[in-house]
Amino acid sequence: MITTVRERLARLPRVRLAHLPTPLDACPRLSAAEGSAISVKRDDCTGLAFGGNKVRQHEYVLGDAIAQGADCVIQGSASQSNHSRQLAAAGAKLGLEVFLLPKRDAMSAPVQGNHLVSHLLGATITPIDPAESSTRRKDELAARLRERGRRPYVVGMGATRSLTLAALAYVEALVEIVEAGEAPDWIFVTSQGSTQAGLQLGCELLGLPTRVVGVNPMTAAHEAYLPPAQIAALARGAAELLGLASAIEPADVVNLTGYVGEGYGVPSAESLAAIATLGAAEGILLDPVYSGKGFAGLLDHCSRGLLAPGERVVFVHTGGLPALFGYADALTPQP
Ligand SMILES: *Cc1c(COP(=O)(O)O)cnc(C)c1O
Image (spheres, helix red, strand yellow):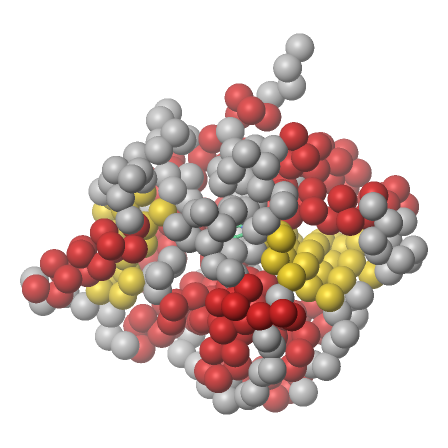
């Protein structure tokens, strides 16, 4: 089945952006401390402008954009958006104009982290009011550009086709994990939908009994939140693009909102502890907004005895590391 999945993926329009396959690092010191055999799939090392999961996803998303004749791409998000940073880099590499609509939020100034990097990559950046709907502003900009004869392609929240293509990229990541010789009992990942949907579809297509646990970086109140029913729909939509069948139902999707803490983009005590734990045990960095919260979810499952001794666990590291510099104050040890 791996051959079939690889063949079907190869039929889809694609651009090359990422260093693939990403490494799968065994974590012996962490595993000894936690009692499970934990590895980290290093999608923080996808290569382009500090890496992360969107570089892998944009191979299919921008492949589709170019196949449809797009001449520019539009994304709107929080000011510290990893997605926007990776899109700006991908656009630069492909010669595709990128329009970003970051929110003027608590993390906009001083210009640091992802926000800073996005500015260095040649994107056209128009800050918007935090109360505005990103989806509406993206659609309005697309309409204006079309009136001027441009061919814009909208990505991110509200753009279901781009989210489904992003899921496809994580079917491939799951294939890489299996090709690296790992058959995990559990996968933990920070996900709002696409990444989890792809990993879960990959497990289904390859007939693996792996339990995929998604840790959401936001609660249901956030405008970009996707409920399990929509995550299942992304998985089935991705299967359809491959010409394969999926029976993933909403009830099959475990996507936890209990590790958000105070809110999206606010470092939690548990995410700071998770950053310290993985850093000290393995020399691998996490960020406080996404991967730190997902890893906190994994550590919590270990400490509550929810994983059987010796079970094999893969943590899919989705990146986000430039945020470390944006959040320096919250991350600095207090005397
Ligand atoms: C965007 C992002 C996620 C979530 O990705 P989805 O595909 O939407 O699930 C997780 N972690 C990091 C670091 C991200 O930038």
